[in-house]
Amino acid sequence: MDKEFFTPRTLGDAIGVSQSSLKRWADKGLLNVEKTAGGHRRIGMEEAMRFIRESGVTVVKPDLLGLGSEDLDVQEDELSSADRLYYALHSGDETRVRSLVLNQYLDGRPLYEIFDQDIQPAMARIGLLWHDDVSGITIEHRAHDICLQVLADLRFRLPRVFTKGIAIGAAVPGDSYTLPTAMVSTALRGEGFSAVNLGPNLPIEALLDEAKKVKPVIAWLSVSHLKKAHILRTEIKELARELREQNTFLVMGGSQLQKLRLDRDPYVLIGKNIHELVSISRGLVANNPQSIDSKGEIS
Ligand code: B12
Image (cartoon, rainbow, N blue to C red; front, top):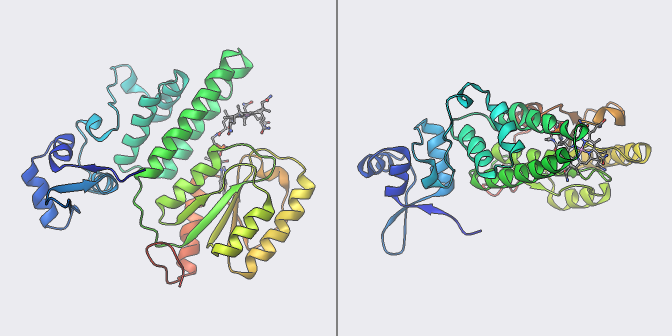
């Protein structure tokens, strides 16, 4: 996808400030403004998102930034963000889901909170509907697809500054769940890792092969569905051993991980949610300072 830019007028109108205020902020180095070949000022979309999130300005016209409009009626105003998300997912309103999630992000809420406290509980509630009625299955499939689209959109809007090194990961073989591993990669990108999601159902051998090539700081595995646990346990033990030799930490999580009953291993770190994943990743960087350039390459 090409880089998306806003004119100073569009950004100014979206956050309800004049173009001269934007220019002042740019002169003070608070907002990075680029120039086109013709000398016109433009603000990159990621830079606009970063500025709004960090400066705490209010988006008054979200539609100008492609964020949808979050016009709530009065009763809905009483609901928690997780409940609002649940209703938007239930009704299949993708625009509204996107707007709810992106606005939470722009309001400065940590990604892990949006994931663990809004999307996860909303999807868990959606996941109960199929017990009642066949339409619950349709709602669940649709909601899942909307979450994936919105996560991709969110990830695209994150700053592309990768100073913490490389992270790669996937869901284990036999696990076709896509959202958990997509969430992990988005959260790690938000933490400054050059994170690559290798998707659902990845052979352990393929993860190891890639890890040997790119030497990540973190390799993650998500377990939401468990098949052939005994084979997987052996494969993961061997994976952890090989990763340890190149100083890569294996980080594991997922709703079915406990059932795998892994042996204790200081190089296998376990997180029960995205908040714990982020804490683990911050701890690893603090204890393992390496020289890393902006593309995430370790030197
Ligand atoms: C979407 C969904 C599906 C979709 C999956 C689409 C896809 N390609 O991904 C479809 C419709 C295909 C599906 C199918 C099935 N599903 Co389903 N599904 C769900 C649902 C609604 C949401 C799952 C999801 O993505 N959640 C969002 C993620 C992000 O949340 P999470 O997995 O809890 O992850 C959190 C943590 O575990 C952690 N985490 C996750 N990964 C990692 C990794 C690391 C490294 C770390 C640190 C942390 C971490 O952080 C996350 C955020 O807090 C759940 C409901 C639920 N309670 O989860 C049911 C659910 C999991 N499914 C269920 C069932 C029964 C099934 C089926 C067996 C149904 C059937 N009869 O066919 C099949 C099995 C499919 C299979 N073979 O794997 C049950 C499982 C019950 C159980 N395990 O005992 C659930 C709980 C629904 C229910 N209440 O009955 N499902």
